[in-house]
Image (tube, rainbow, N blue to C red; front, top):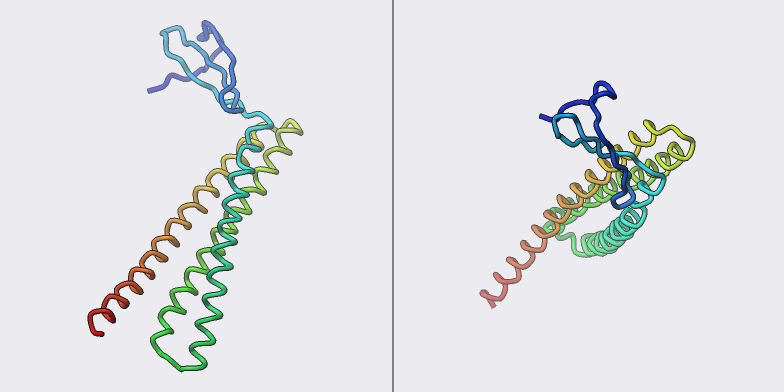
Length: 171
């Protein structure tokens, strides 16, 4: 269990530093335990900008690819009235829904990073920390949804490969 710093008399020495843009203050308790108290700087939320930007680009590419596939399947369905295309279209509908949610979580994460930077700039440290923490959680949610969409995508490709193998055996 980590001891708490309930009064300043417990602190025998302190040392400040910075690690990847996140400031920290190391406090040594009289019993020899060390506690790291996190301090967030204005540059800390900025660390997420490149990450979220690249994720949003990847999500947009996924969306555009799925939109092209959906349009193609839609045209094929209306030409041939092939009922076997309906499950594929339903699968793609679910994937588009997931990609929309990934993008929403990513955009909210980026927005909260900006809010965090503004709050830190204004001196509202607690609000800055809270909004940055929520931004991190939203980024995690976005990536978890992305993993789910990837699983579905691989499952759909596996079905197509299985169908191809069956056609190869028959003919």
